[in-house]
Image 1: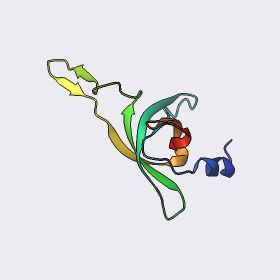
Image 2: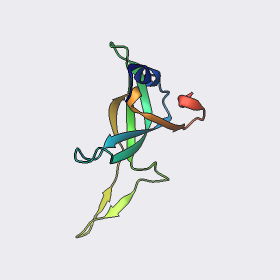
Image 3: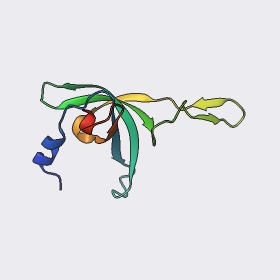
Image 4: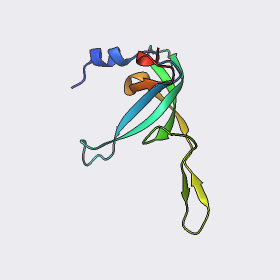
Length: 106
């Protein structure tokens, strides 16, 4: 079980360009099943409650290589899978690398 000290250790500033993973429960029926989304921190700040908040642009289940994925739709046409930006506490994100190199995005 996570303690307050564990949370505090992860409540850190994440430099823009830090590659992160967000793990979420896929289903309330099976808490052992999680899904992961991958993204890049674009902005991070200390809020009035002393928690670091980050805007993260997510790309889905993997980091893109080159242009966004395009899928052919039934009946013709194409669907683009565009990135989307959400806000999360830095403590809820797992650092997986950096666009610039170094630990914790530094």
